Length: 347
Image 1 (spheres, one colour):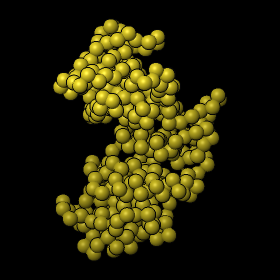
Image 2 (image 1 turned 45 degrees about the vertical axis):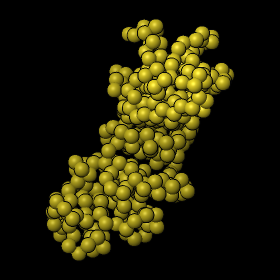
Image 3 (image 1 turned 90 degrees about the horizontal axis):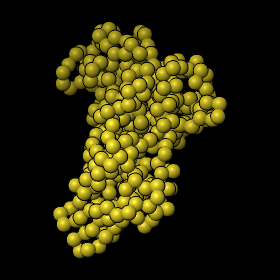
Image 4 (image 1 turned 30 degrees about the vertical axis):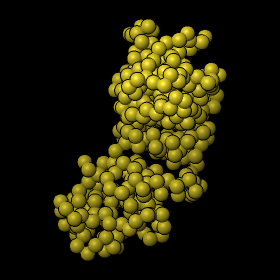
């Protein structure tokens, strides 16, 4: 355990190290309830007061309360110094007008007088997660829980959602605790989910999730092109569902399909049925093997006959997959905002 004195000294050193040449940093008397107060002096003699909150970790859900408390000390500039700050915590601090420095190198300090702007990127993931707590949304179990929270509109309880979605109730509970600590969902006094920020939850998932195409996908060529492949796809035996560009609802895609990406139980067997040729370059089909029915759950055929994964799965794959998928993922999320009643259901 690090002592309070050492923690304050480390916070002061961290801020001092970020200052441009000719700037100085020194302590001043801290107001009641404030961990550390500093005075910065620019080379021209202009000064700025800082009030610093020192934390080991900071949950996004407490940012609003913290910012309100520090704002009472205006015009002093509020800054949080922490061991590590999650992407959501950093975004919340910036939106609240609070600067931050974490000891992995994530920094955002902004002063108008004297003028100062320091922005740096450090660790995107917690280098020392707390033992015994869920700190990541990686893995199929967490993915199923996230998809359930996104795909189903509250209110509902854990057991009700588990029954409707097929997700594990214990995993749902752990994932919900993590998301609640980051202010991404809300529960009532009885523990039921009454508010789920589906877009924020989806984006939080993609911070940990990675599209499995590079590990489970096999590249193929349909010599007659993507259009011919789509005509044959409907004849495929067994479950399948499209993701990537092909998985975007008709009329939403921002570019034509040049690589048709489809989840199937066995890429090799599907390729034989569809007459595809395995290739290392120039592929126009990517078959992704899946033994996880969740990736296919809540998929549905479109008017063109293509069975598409649920929008939440397609969006996650686009936002984390290779190529131009990020732009298409953002377009899909915009469609999801405008058509929530179309794709989001009651349990």
